[in-house]
Length: 417
Image (cartoon, rainbow, N blue to C red; front, top):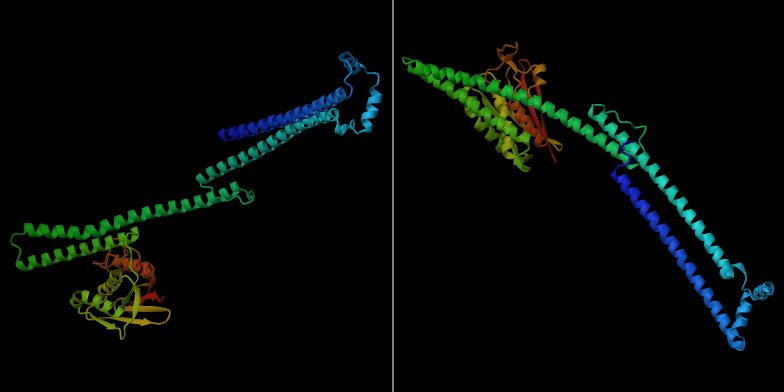
């Protein structure tokens, strides 16, 4: 309770004291004014009485007036006469009024003192109780700072401090969750930077080695030189695609991209996706078969939806054997519109299916890495993550069905609004 007599409490006590003092002085002034008025009226009554007597008995001399006023022998007779006319009833005479006024003034002052003391005591008790709650709230906040997030329900009441305590608890928990999330994001960012550096380091190192060979090998044949240049072009194209994809993901993560919500025709969109990947598919003798018999619409952003489907079909081409095919079909009903993309490649293991949409995750196929997993050499593990991010931001979702040597089907569904 060391903070009880703080500045605000002193100010409140001072205000109450001034109000009490003003009320006390005002009450006494009003009583004194009423008392003076009553005395003035009583004096006026006697002046009028003696004036009338003088008018009736003009022959009475001044000495006789003085003798009559000083004479105390006939007080009882005078009282009897005045009481006969009701003048000496206690409530109707100045003497009675004066006694009542004095008694009332004493009672008023005592009452004011008692009321002031009682109100002051109640206010101080309330302030002390409030200060104890504030001290308890301060201690509670310190426990929250130390990681003790237990909400004390038992001592909560309906006052504003208990409500404040509950809101502080909610705010602290939210801040803790945000701090934990920021910590996870920081770790994820560190992992992403590590993965990005790894993804960039391999092709850049390869390009540097090829460039060194080209510059140092003067007697290199034209065929070998052309193959080296083709490999350099391939590696740099992969790096360019990776950087562009990472920039797109960064824009989505930062929330700086405003996705449009327009009606899109799936048939021309999917044919445009197939045309953009035609050369890549022809290099592996893979045919892209589109089964879209009628016009179907979805709501979304044309360019970003195209980006998502391009990444999914590109992934299917990468993991399909030569001289195979990829089937793209569209189905719709009253609930959703679905695009299925099926390849006939090596399939995805159940373990890999849990992680294929994670950034920089590489499927266990192809060559073996130092960790013991098999990875595809030209896979970056970023395309499917971008596709999932885009589809989910457009109100859809992606599922996958696959099995070893049975191929893979990606289902992209958009809810019909």
